Length: 343
Image (cartoon, rainbow, N blue to C red; front, side, top):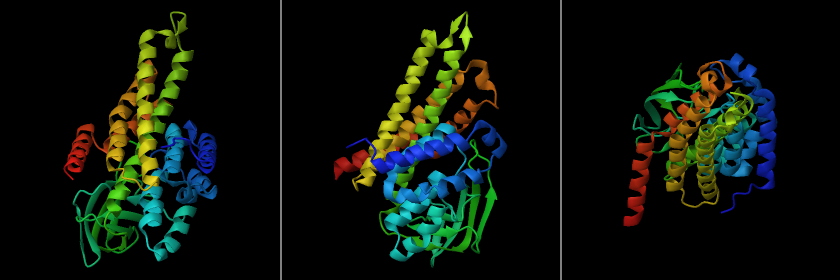
């Protein structure tokens, strides 16, 4: 396993870092409220970063999402890539790839997914019925990837007959919505195994987003404690502050390294179910520790809802909830390991 990015992956990550740094400022994020930043999304797609995911793979996407997480930029990058570009490129037919990949890459179409499967969506004669209570970035989406009770994947247009969406506010401003399907038409994506592959990729991608959120939170805490003085010296010279920051750094690196491993294995076509679960567990459990530490290290400033570090806190908790609680992920991981030992 090689954690070093390719030249193409490094170039894409560098470009993403510049775009996010220039456009995902605190002032612009405050203006955006709970909605997405259309100008920033346009900048990313015009630069070819969404379309590039087809070439740079999941590991390349993770690097892009780390940069997004550092700034908590409000764009549907993760959702469009893991529930649109990657599953269509990997599991779609030639006709589906030719029709869908160009519009997803250009940003003319936006995808999201009703993941993970909860047995809420049924299919009969290629038509879907059921409800997904909270789908991230649904208010921006033109297409939704929906798993049915048999874990087959279906792509649904949000403007199709039998599809209804209503806004839902989540902890982080993810433009989420409630999806209600009433005999909605859909097209099948892939065959057996497509759901498991897509779920592993999604868990890995959102873990990468959490790595960036944590890195951004920690960077803000380091800057604050290095400049804020108490009793004539910086807060960062206090042992308790140093230890709390060190623990947060180790947690962030644990999220990053497990995510890189899972992404690399998926890109190489290797089994990655347990690895994706491991990355998701670290992102959930360690992620919330880091964003809590980031807020606490800001002292009273961390309680200010308008302070930039509070946005990292909200995103960290939202990602914790979206990936699943630690005990739930550990139970699934344990079952997967036990099943593998019995095979």
